[in-house]
Length: 249
Image (cartoon, rainbow, N blue to C red; front, side, top):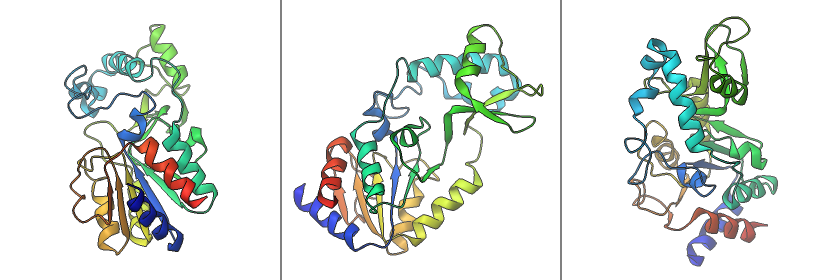
């Protein structure tokens, strides 16, 4: 692993722009369950159809009751950024990372201190009003559901929706366009803790590689981009990223 880390560090030193894409493997290290895979909660504990846009529109009360159960499963206690989040902040603060593109909705990159974060799937810590578009903290909405107000509503009377991409919804256009801009313009692209199996996020590293970027992967398992990658690290993100940051500090 050391030789590959040295090679990656050298590429970042020479780079004008470095961008990271993070997936569930960065969140699971903080104790947040994975959604997919053999141990994923989709299909094992929760039916993805319960969190489809059509279900939200047809049965907002039932949707919010299930959303509360999901929230309590994902965040049973206070979760905190882990060593991988902190290493990305360190890379950014030392001028070695320009942006984090994330598939995760837990908000831990912002909590750790990352300044430039592109949230492809939204942020579960917020809710958005379907009528006026206003955003507010999700904790208040969950408390109201616990108290029997389901669905929770905005002061304007509109129904509140988790500010995340539901099944049946497109990714926010502005977010995916920014991600593509960073991918096409960067010199080094890091894909971290992602199986790279869910589109359209999975295509972002390929866009970067096709544009000539040095592509590095940090993931426990092989991904569809393992063959074309310049560096493929099959290791724990909480070990690899601090080691990379230390080399560049």
